[in-house]
Image (cartoon, rainbow over all chains, first blue to last red; front, top):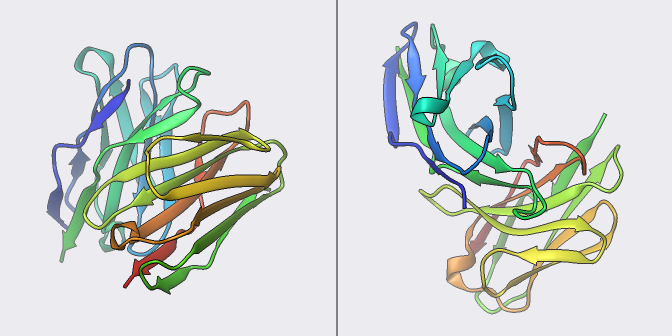
Length: 116
Length: 112
């Protein structure tokens, strides 16, 4: 079965600084990878996704992520963080197959705090 | 465009009372539907998913159940709530042939 690890529970960065949120996955085939963001008390919004092709994917709000097969990683980056980026971020791996029932498995999340 | 709605947004229920959370998707047909739960300080746990009317798969044994009476309607229920059922419940959908799952706004359940 697939699994996702987000090793950082909390991260604090200064506004304007760069950001990298780590995500490692375990899956026996080529994964479908996602990053979602959740503001307090709200649902999850899709930031970006990787299915195939170019390993550097661009998302909304200036985020990007890079798929590295050799490291089983899909880290999320942003060159300059804004105070409105403070939220919880979830990495997810999809097992889009009849065997796995088209499910997403999520990491535990990383809470991003932005200090001015 | 497709939209997903779930309600109620907030619910406070006593232990032992029943539960019904409803989710509907508009603008698509035959979606895959999902119920996730997010407990305080935890990630998201898949509870149920459905690939069609009347087809429900349960991921975690518990006192919750799900039903899909119509193509775009997904209901999460319980006959008797436990304190441990408190959490944030998220409905989600994807196109049957698609790879991306989209989430509703969530429902806060507090069992007291």
